[in-house]
Length: 365
Ligand SMILES: [Zn+2]
Ligand SMILES: [Zn+2]
Ligand SMILES: [Zn+2]
Ligand SMILES: [Zn+2]
Image 1 (cartoon, rainbow, N blue to C red):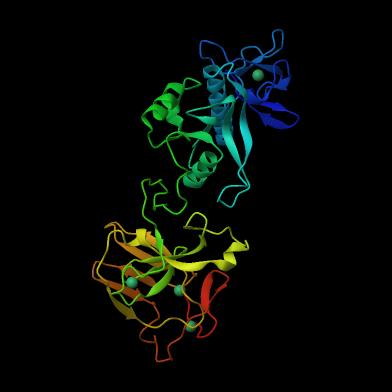
Image 2: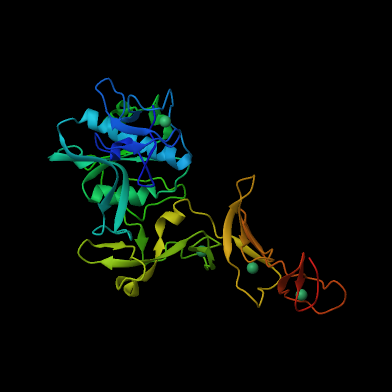
């Protein structure tokens, strides 16, 4: 069954094409139309018009973005079948206004969107299915937060939720019934706090105690804060700080939108979650000196032994921070002994043809 067609120089999927609308098959260039979904579970799909020259053309399966769009169409078909007669709107790729929520975006695009005629006690105003395909990179936590805040339920589907050109809507139902981590409804879930994000991006609930505090939770450590991977973190005790604004009405801190007026009121707070598993302050060993030409821009990596280490992202800089249990080693990677008697040089690397040469001392790499 074809699920991809062309219309007015655009790729279209069945659920965005009305009955009787003519579209073109990208494979044989003959006319097609959309039909379905059907009661037996067959999703809405394209078909070649009888009497066309299509022969037994099966259309195209298309590239990755086409596949993703096809899955959205399948999800819409299944929602339409399941909630037949109960919705006012059920479409793919719907723009949802989230300007009133705490996150920066004003709008989000829901992969598959169903809006109920009457608000549903469990699902709220509607159901959104997000199809996670090939690490598309949607921010699960912030997106879930926005949809729940707008009183919509959201289900995070994966390609496993599809089989034989169908969206397995039973799995969605099951997920909502058991309240598992792929399904969020206004009835069961509070919008996840935007600040309780852990490293995997998973949502952590049940955070009753405040996460941010003005009081230093590790007073025994003489902190050494370093910008690492976008956070300000003490390399001795792992404590992180973040900019937050206090909301006196809700008596809690929130993350200000970038460049907002609130951002100017932000204060640096300690993040209690960063020291949930306390470590005794590490001893710092520093090798070499901070280079004068740049300040290191640290990125976090993990090595095979699951130790953390940071590398500087400046090209040519081989500085590292290695975090061990009881010590942290900062290696500025500045040559301790000059190669040939010349004074120590903070090399300034420049690409010259096929080699990289220091413009200060002429050393080649
Ligand atoms: Zn065709
Ligand atoms: Zn510290
Ligand atoms: Zn560096
Ligand atoms: Zn040099």
